[in-house]
Image 1 (cartoon, rainbow, N blue to C red):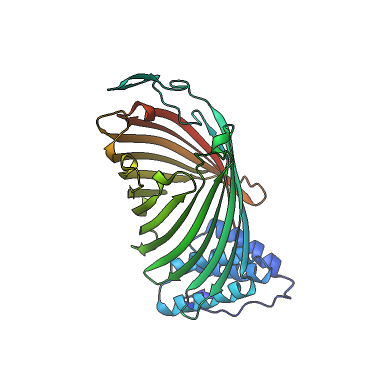
Image 2: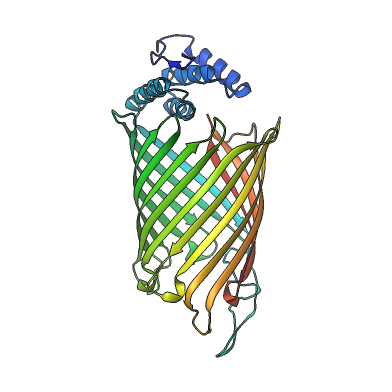
Length: 378
């Protein structure tokens, strides 16, 4: 049981005929009182005994995030290790439907004016709408460490399918993640290798491999608010486009907190630098965004978000006497119904209108993009 900073890792008898009833009852109570830690631990306990290992891990991770003392933290880590040793493997699938009013990011301009002359942009000013799909699967093997940390070996493969052949591709990732909870935060360190393979394979194929490392740390400001810092560094090598080879570095900060009654706010800022061989493609970019979400009883969770971005490139763009400079803005909304479930997953609908302005006419575009994604719930 979980009470007054103490956790017992002694689980109920798996042969208990009432264990399914206990799990159902604690799950119902938890939906009404999600901050009840004693109740959440009881539900994790019952989930473990009924073989619902993923659910048990989910609820124990939630408890680990709010550990109130070193003693409680250690006991929760021991409880998590018990579940992970009983079920080290986990599997998952993902599926998204991705409609867009401008699936090819076609320029809003019909002509491109340069010092060398005026050129007509292929399909410029004619946006093509379409629906894309993304489907994939993942597998992971988790190993608890004596320190209380976990080591997770993971792999996933995804397929993107669009009406335009050049966008159709497979991407696969292999990663190892070291993760550690403390009473003040959570840290993850992840080296990874990612491979992109496109259907259209010619001398200018976009096939590439990315090798990188990502580090993130969430610092708890309170039980309900935190700041997340992340830094990733990678090198991307293209099979045929050597001029695109080079490092990509990105860092970001995210602030999560309750706001007024029933609202939650998410504020993010990031910086990115990409340094390929081609000087005119090197850039430094920045982005800021904000999102406010609110649950509505009986309906689900609604959200609204805003974003701004910019990129400044180094070398002069070909056929121009100046480097490329972009500005972007977006506004969007999301909705996740409270009760609707599809094979144990909750669908989420999100839409975003975005506009990109550029001094290079090829990169002025407007698009409305939506997504229907599915998230497993416990």
